[in-house]
Image (cartoon, rainbow, N blue to C red; front, side, top):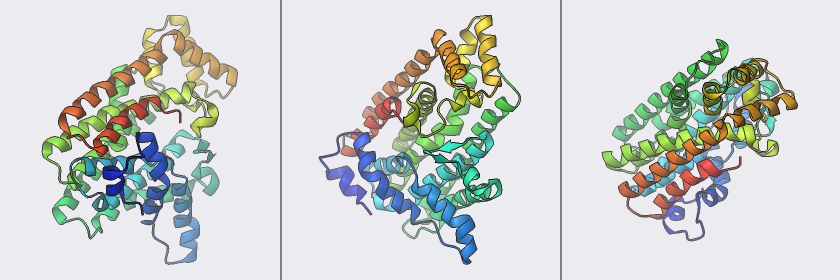
Length: 350
């Protein structure tokens, strides 16, 4: 296991958040996966634990556990005490993606067929449920955390889970009911709940809690995570529309196929003329996979200025958030990485 304290405090050869991810993602992934148990019967491994291990090994950039470590060190804490909490959030992320792909009828995740297509719907739901069970259990059994800290961390995880489920309810419900009266403000509520809490706010707050940060630091890092986590989701939406298909490792432009109410979409629907608005709704409602029709939908959204609007919104969020963080956290290598994180959230290509 890499020594994150040494890496964040003393390393001179990591000069950006992207470097941090590239150097540490695989090793923190191994540490996270070490918390996945084995079954008491061989078929439990076959049908439950092994599929979870396989899915988690294809785990992306691991930015959530890594920002948790950075926040812990940024307030003067010991990152080694934060491993169970970092694993808990990554297991939650895994479970959320498995269930999200089922709800969306998605086909591709991280360059591979979705778990429900490989293992079947019932087993995939069960594997996702296991990931959720491991969230609180991983922290509750950690002998390196005192009881007071455990309670605070578990409270954060419980609230995070609720917020994410609330956001998912809006996302799925709007699609089910064919809702096209969604405003940009509505989208921001949904995306903040569904993504910003667990992709930014809660990892940073928990890192600061375990690190012994002040209440001002904890809440400041939480707010930083809310702003940058929301920007992360907006960038995700943009990449799905205008990124490179080979870099998304997810179904390119499947947000259009699934009729997702992204910030780009809701801004376009509010600002387009009647004919273009009706055509965009038609395309979003048709579940089309036709490349020409997907291109047409993007062209309509671009015509309304909605792609630039979303990009500028995300960049403004991160710019304001960085200024706040500089005023709140003492200079350090860890703080520099967290500032660099904001830039990576809105400039990454995958």
